[in-house]
Length: 194
Image: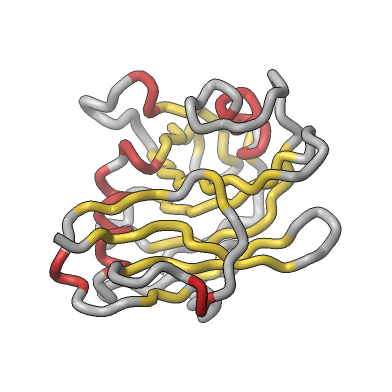
């Protein structure tokens, strides 16, 4: 199980994401520098113990109506070989672990591998800010996980009731909190069937 260190990161995760998010093609805001708040998420353990894996949900409050985004993150102690330039979100100095290379998880094989494992029921989601603590609020809906190799990440999140989740595929549902304190849940990723 991953250990959560109570320490600093410079720049912080939100500072790294603020400069990166508005440059992504799926960003729906119009601010050059979104105003981000951490709204939810969870972690997965890397079986090799080398990569920190986090699925962070942030809310951009710069628009008239807040927008929730999912950003899968891979934290590494050294650069990821053969990663495209666009994969690197930035580097940060961790108070315990030293320099961390922070990658967009869709380009990190450790992150995508564990997401596949989670959707197949072979990995256990962990609370975002607590060591060795499963997160029962992260749920998988659907059956027959061996049918599909293609995972689609929903970058822009929309609230849905668990009962409204799409049928005919396996999907990952988790929650976040809007800036006014209202809880929401939505589909973060789907494993498409063949």
